[in-house]
Amino acid sequence: MEDFFKSKKFKILLAFLVVIFAFALRGAYTGGLASFSDNVMGIILVPFQRISSSVSEGVHSFLNVFLNASNISKENEELKAKIEEMNKKLVDYDKFKRENENLKEFLEIKEQNPEFEFETATVIGRDANSKFCSFTIDKGSLNGIELRDTVITSKGLVGVVNEVGMSYSKVITVLDASLDVGTYISTTRDVGIVTGRISEAEKGNTLMTLLPKDVGAKKGDIVLTSGYGGNYPKDIIVGEIIEIRDETHGLSKYAVIKPASDIKNVKDVLVIKSFLGENKGKDITDEKENTEKTNQR
Image 1 (tube, rainbow, N blue to C red):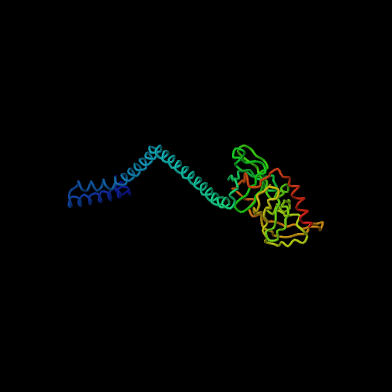
Image 2: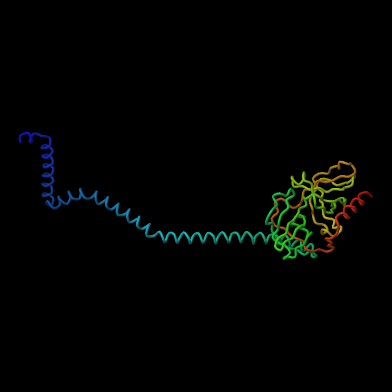
């Protein structure tokens, strides 16, 4: 027993009792033991109350998320529907804006050529295997489009229709080696035939062939359709001369032409379904022979 009173445990217990006794005296002095016990309990319980409150708040938040999941899902679906509606409106707006801009340009052409019968069309596909940038438009026989109809933009000639379906048509361009267009140079009035060549088509250019050896044309001169034979309307701009070269046989010259229309990137076109003096059945061979005879005089 004597050893216990000398031990460390006893000393600690004694110190604890002294502290308790001191708190008891202070409590009695300031308001009684009840206040003291409340303080002691407060010291012990407050940390546990805080932990319990935090746990309770966390569980409540988790349950709120779980219970409101259906509401959140519904709100997400509503937001998705609104976004889709807004995107559709933007697409419609862009479409109407483009159509209005095109119609404005085409109306100007109509005012200058009241005898033209037009059909607006949009490029809906391009032939990946074509070296001459041929493409498909969204109008066909149901819209009155026929073979050999001339295709233009507000800038100038694009090409001709060479295949017609009920709701689509295929167009070959002025870059195409199979296409021959009777043309003349605005400044000198020299006539020639615009036709494509692979080496130039890769650069986005075409050629005006059968020019006289003494042609007075120069870089920057404008080339237009001659209208000879009735295959194309007269005075449609084809493009601009960027170079004059000698033919290999040395008997004539040809001009390299940069088309007025952006052939490789054109998106909207105008199909001329009929015009004054039209004769789509005219053989282009006659036009070539007439051009050669004219240039030999």
